[in-house]
Image 1 (cartoon, rainbow, N blue to C red):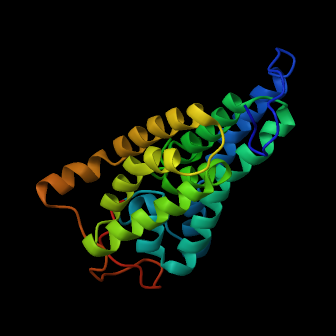
Image 2 (cartoon, one colour; image 1 turned 90 degrees about the vertical axis):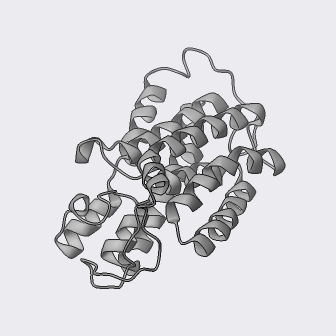
Length: 231
């Protein structure tokens, strides 16, 4: 196999998978757990985002409550939280692709279950995109197109996110990517996990209670984020 930089995987001996590797795995979780939207809400708007909108700490609720000027850096940082660990840590640890996936998974778990904010967080979309940006950039581009194609006509951000997650393994299979079958399995597990994270949205959709994008409303940040995001 090859690593995220396209080089042959080094041997995965006990020496290489020692203290440094496990320390980097913890660091991947810690970096992923940085609650970007919570910090921006507190520092620049003086609010706890968990108490506004959907209560979610992802980019969508940041856009809804804080406005686009605050949401854009949230997206950028949340994507970077997934991309950087898989891009950097594999070479630092000198391990193979299985560990690279572990670093990515740890970053995603950190984003979704941050120890800094009571094990709450986002729903994994942006940080997952960052992980796959390193492995399968064309699949990420395809996912973005799928998200736009579903979200804007329907008005449901959650539906766009669920459909994008469900199509991720297909997009990975159909586009150039690293990691072979390992990445395909990882994308399937991740898709199921992200859909599970949207179970509350699925319940609201079934009851007809899920709000749509673009139904104007008040935002705490004053920059005009649309009311009704529950993703």
